[in-house]
Length: 318
Image (cartoon, rainbow, N blue to C red; front, side, top):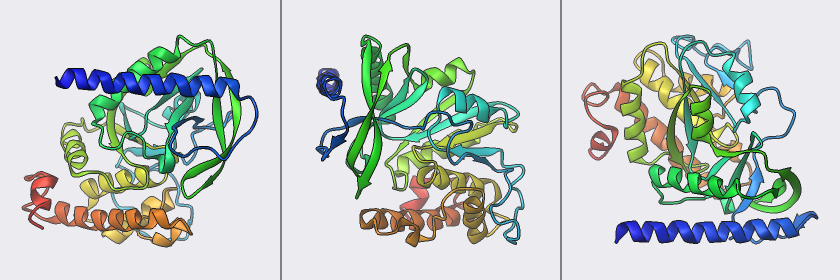
């Protein structure tokens, strides 16, 4: 019964996806007043970039070279982060990383590549795949891109305007399809490790996701690099850069310095809620994320917490 329900859900998604594509093919003009309930196929990187947007590594220079924030342990962290990459910008970024690399894909929303350019399905406030497991999302993506490969041409939307997380205006980008594949396929092709830890855009990770990440880190060989990415390279990517920095250096570096230095490397300042500007819909999630980071630091510092207890087990009692 469960398998039948899952297959039915996938079938409904695929039908909606095909209908959406047909509508896009009929529309060669700028789209305005877009219905927010319909996921749009959007372009995730500007053509012509050398490196992914917001690319940085733990060895990058601080944006403020005069800043006195501690760098202890940062050089040895072996972590990188960015926005969503294309095949080419990922290959360029990998030249900065020496050793085995794991892609840690933090996107909850379905995404992948057409003609080696990144695309994704964008819902209102980028809340695609809410309540879906990572395994289900990966299966769904495999089916979506299998269907995409059967199409000869598509129009993908370049986002021009958004308000309160809802797309208001796009322009079409035409693709004669040469290839179409999910991100795990690209990672395998480039001999990279791949870990999917889906997190809703602008939100803290769920407890089970935190547990999975901690278990994964415990198994990493010493020379491994972790390459975190989300769509924009800021919120989710910075969250996990901070978490990883805490796990490696939290016993000798203050939380304030860890948060500050990840911002100075090119991420967001997760403790500066004013960075969300006038987007009130983001602020509640940003406050929850800040509280989570503070609690996660306490978990790592607690001798009865990390690594003896899982985050979920410890968190329930603190």
